[in-house]
Image (tube, rainbow, N blue to C red; front, side, top):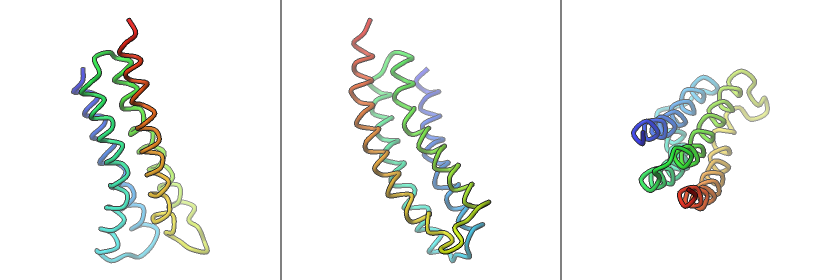
Length: 129
């Protein structure tokens, strides 16, 4: 059962940077270094969320604990990817592509905040019978 959740956690880790890079290529004209930068600055916050979830998946034994452990990276990855794709369809006219530099900061706060919140939740669920 843990392997299934680890696979979903890994998919969340890969999905966000890939969608960010693809959407930035579609939104603005970029060179290789800019593409690499967008990929890296989106990879770092989701990596933090991935590591929190990976740690909790190793500690969890119940289904509810597994779900709580991976909900943060999955939600962050899905919502951020959806935001990037929405910006392909409806870009910011005054500064196209600016969200590719601004959103990762918000993702970082979310990854740390939700990761820290999920730790006690998983341990509480594990202690319950």
